[in-house]
View 1 (cartoon, rainbow, N blue to C red):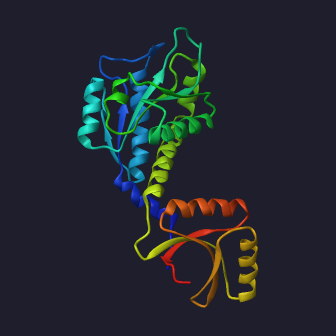
View 2 (cartoon, rainbow, N blue to C red; view 1 turned 180 degrees about the vertical axis):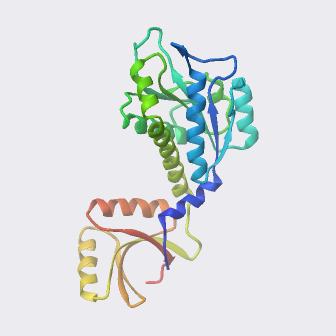
Length: 276
């Protein structure tokens, strides 16, 4: 039996390829306000997020890293040819009048599947930094959302012609990049957990205690069973180990671990043959 190190989840990220798209570019400035150009903000944030994702094992492909223009069709084609798993496009919003609106929103082709999960996670992460959360909206007409063959999300990181959003963008730039990156990585971890299964002879289990004294182990065991948990006792390496469940799918073990922690138990996930 071995303890599953949560840091080991990072190695699974190597299986993911993410397209990072800085919206607009070149002669296409995007929105403008008092000399500020959307294309520049988009590129700065896209590069910052892409760097964090790369440091966490994600295979990052950029649609652009300099001030050049590509059509939305070219961007979608690049993503499809790369065989990417996700497409993340960076933009900033604009309104008819200055300082009319503020807030962040994320756009998706339709509100379903992994793209919705990622969009909601990004929106929520930015909301925690003080941005008003406008929500997730379906935009099936946008080429980069319609023509991409993988889940795609377009982030509107505040309004370019709203002073309050610009102040947040500038003064909290590093936090914004980290928040978006964490939301993306968190979503990918959820996908990893859903697909990660044990080997043929092994099972994932949640351990709540390890004791040299059999009586102490029994006390925890009986308490867990009285609370309705499928707990059992395993004697191994001179220790009485109290464990709960035996799951082929890691995501099921994680759900049980979360339930146990809410009940006040200190837990960790282990894996090995179900011989007990």
